[in-house]
Length: 323
Image (tube, rainbow, N blue to C red; front, top):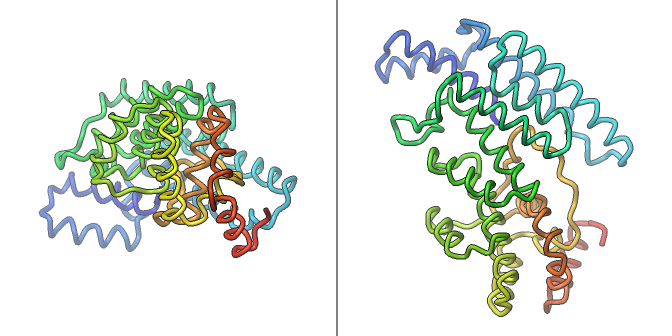
């Protein structure tokens, strides 16, 4: 979530709607808002969003040295920053009790069990729907183009991922598909969650339709999901071909699969990663963990395939990672 950019867009959108500006007039307004957003704040909802933007900046800055901490220090630092996030969300909600992003971040920062998180997220979406009506696509046909709707899209994306985490695979796919229908640009990556859910459900037809919908561009989630899908279907020759594709396309993907690492809580969105990078492979495998745990033979099968263990060990040696 690029909170500052959204803050600027929100302010410009609100002011532009009141002034009924032409496209060129709006462009000039946007430049002025970018220069000093605080001059264009109008009400408590703007103050609440600024509070959230500042909270996210602090949160992300506090993570910059995590890789140098031992486990105990990391957990202490994590606990501290989640507590600060809860405090910041409480402050934002005092200003605007209906601030959807604050409600979302507060729910995540509670660090409660996943079923409780899902219940709270569904409650947040239900309350938002009662207040603002059902989600709809913008005039462009893509809901993401309406910056005021983006907080609810983030809630939907988090609901879908949490459904996957709790083994509600059909619900994960259904929520993700509804999000894609609202926002075909899929800035929040609902297609990644859907791909994993469909692999777990062994729904090859729907999986192929999802791949085609996004012009078969591919990414680490799709490559990994294809391996899982074919392995679960028992089509081992095809699964081996898919595994070789995963190894060839996803940097360090086999290492990440055989030696998964902890990925911290998303706040609120998954991190941005370069396509097919090791970071993307790590995030995809983290999200697939509920499925991989449910298919316990998969990692051993991967390791037993020709050249896979060697590829993982070679990557670890090259990067200076433990094996």
